Length: 387
Image (tube, rainbow, N blue to C red; front, side):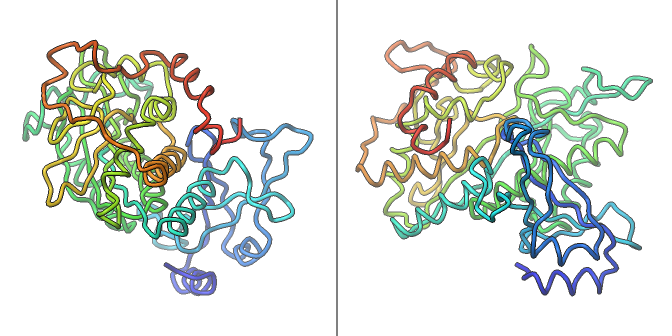
């Protein structure tokens, strides 16, 4: 948690020459601009301008000047860059030229949600991610194919599992960048992998998820492979999920947090599953189909794992194409709605919903367009996000 002065001292002591300023478009895709180390003090004071009209979902050309303001607490040395003339990365908040926070900056929206929950309800949510991805081979021209790196299955070991070394490199790099990994293993699909890392506050968790995807893609490319985070890269194999684990700092509010998230699951789906391909995943190969919750039940879209006091929630429907900043923002507001309005949960579902259709339980939207219509008509969503 560096201050601006500490960062300026650090870059001098560590022979840092380049600063990568990272930010995100409306879809959660990471962008960046590099500045020289001697420009950082000015960047802290005035920000660094960029053309917002060139960023998906941002401003139109006639009023397109926005400024990146680096967050010193997020500085991290990029370990795969040279030791002489080092490169560091900082996440940024986006502001208008007059200094006001930019209304479409997901990072700022998440910070506001965290602050509001702490102020209104004297509690906060911690988030932990389980992110799945595929490793595919490249063709002779270096372009991605759909040929998996291996044909191993769930938690298989070498030699069938050929991803061991890459997962180890990813875990080492995560650790070097201040993101402690917890577990890694081969997943069900051929060439499919999962790496989990320690929970943290919402903003750090979103930053970590973005960093994780960047590290995985970089390490895969260094090994001559392509890391695919799409939700359903192989139609006949398991899709990739972005399982979101949540706990509340005040365990007495756990049930109301769960009730609020459950009540808004249908409206949140558009932000959890953001591509057409997302809806090929839902309802197949152990991806949830129904809006249901259950204790220790992986066939429901919300699971309460077997932990002391049942204090953790796992949302199983999101996939890796989502924007974690927007999603975590909406989850926090849904949780606050549960607390504010004393929402009640239906009975948990104990049966296996993978093996039986149940018309009495409402299903998740089955297309992107259907999910979009639900979100656009939602007063809850409109109260949080601008159109």
